[in-house]
Image 1 (cartoon, rainbow, N blue to C red):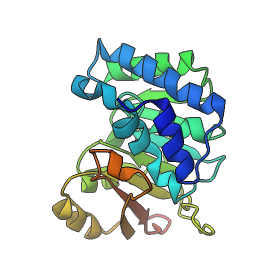
Image 2 (spheres, rainbow, N blue to C red):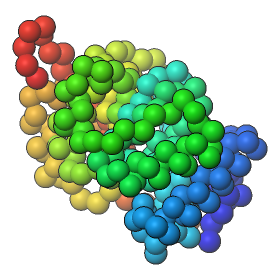
Image 3 (tube, rainbow, N blue to C red):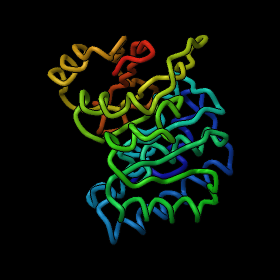
Length: 238
């Protein structure tokens, strides 16, 4: 089993140096997630011993080459047990994070985990993304939407659009505000084609998440998909 020391070493080898308190928080999250997993199906029980390579690392490895605006607002769509939102929040502690899932038992578990970890500023929502994105309090509210396993790519693109602020430019390797970030595995060429054909989509970028040490893990298929949207003229529907 690959543990916290291995995870810290992989992060450091790729330019992301975790402080001791951040490493401790990853361990706390692992412990709380696995405890909750005894009652709920938050992650596969067969995969519990692979928390660091298949869940923690999979959630944050895109940050080895990309950056986020540190004070941004982010929505984790279809968060399940808090992935990838909580690992990202451990690194970007000033981020304003909202975690959304349609299953109340899962959001209750995530709320409990956040409370134990003293992430008091994070918010948890229960509901369907396609409905909540139309409410005034959430419409155009977030700099980023992130999703790890919420559904087909083209569906996630449709659900996310209403949540995001208008796109903005960014410098260097920083992901611009107004971007949907999807961590996607497996074959999804058909979903990608449907996504590119959506009228609301401006730009789609797909890149391999390669990094030093990835030869030591089994789940190597994840890709980083970044999607920006076209501006909608005032008075016209999306």
